[in-house]
Length: 372
Image (cartoon, rainbow, N blue to C red; front, side, top):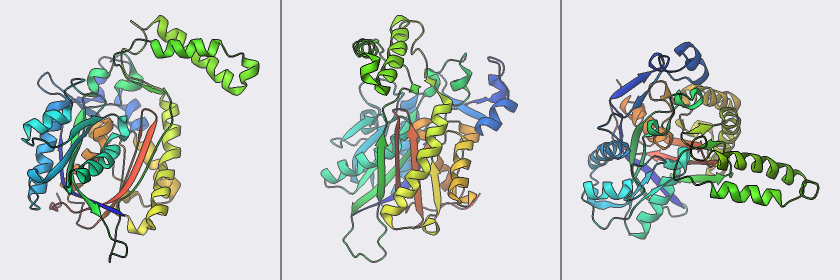
């Protein structure tokens, strides 16, 4: 059985603040429309001097310095994992750049993309990589520059997303059965192939074309419901292939209603599943940090589970949805507000594009900060 503890936290935010009122000058919207629907008043966008890499490096340095207060040096790190869907380059990875800048030669370093669930997936990958290298500590970062994927003409996404980075140094290892006061690291992961969230990349339309051709070969009366679904896929694919250059995935797109329904369903299931695996109860959990997508989602989860509202932390009001960075930046803000204390148990729950989801229960063992 494994254990995992947070022993260092850090975050970095771009200098440019974009309020809902700012957005109202370039699209048909207002703070009165956005805030009740999302819980977001503002978000941060990178300037020309900032990017996912610069934010990741700043957040990583803070987390490492935080861990060094515990007597853990950067030379003890056994892995660097960065979760991002908006890296500056396809290669080298953000993690490789961090490895160089932090002067950690030979430490395994890689990026992963599980969209908004990425940080939780990163924890799992990092602890396994660290164990392979025979070390107990690892650095996990979530970093995004989502502003470069947005269209200011698309109100459905431009109002939601922001840029930022969060980082954590984790301590992980094996727990012997019967260890007194044993508080294990428990996790759950899953995925459901869906294109309800799309972000631009090196799009060619080849996959969609193959889907359309496959659908055309299956008579609907033989395929039943699957055939109907494939016909829908074919229509979408044909549209996308036709407009691949100018109308398909030139900016982030999302079916907000589908994502909302998915999140409200999956997060309570994640939390219940984690508690069942760990043998813990609501009373054992001090904080629940969900992906900071929408305040309405988190409030729905809290009410559906009949948990106290104070257990659910939210900071999207000033940062928006920062995808893979949202959970680690929320952890950092919790710490800086003096609300995290040694030995506390935390549930982290994420969901996002893919569709992906993941959750874990771990412990906090980083320095405490005086309440501000």
